[in-house]
Image (cartoon, rainbow, N blue to C red; front, side, top):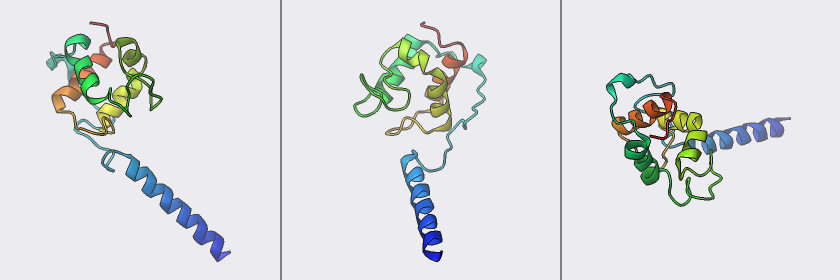
Length: 124
């Protein structure tokens, strides 16, 4: 019985470390938090073409992340339709700081994406 309990504790410990290791920084936090309340009336840079897409393409649409053919998370994020279809997942991941994994977005960049999504993710 003690061996079984030790086995279960070991598996749970390994699982916990794996989950923590796979998160961006282990804290689950970010500049804006998971729920992220942003006053979008003060954010002027929320155009998809001029503001959001360049951030997505430079920070998310990389080999091994969300480039063409990707099956990671919401999949590829190479055009407006793909980003718009994944808006809720993108918002959550950006707001919480889980994504992008290989870089950190500024508060202004996060706010651009969040406010663009909160305004209906238009193709503007």
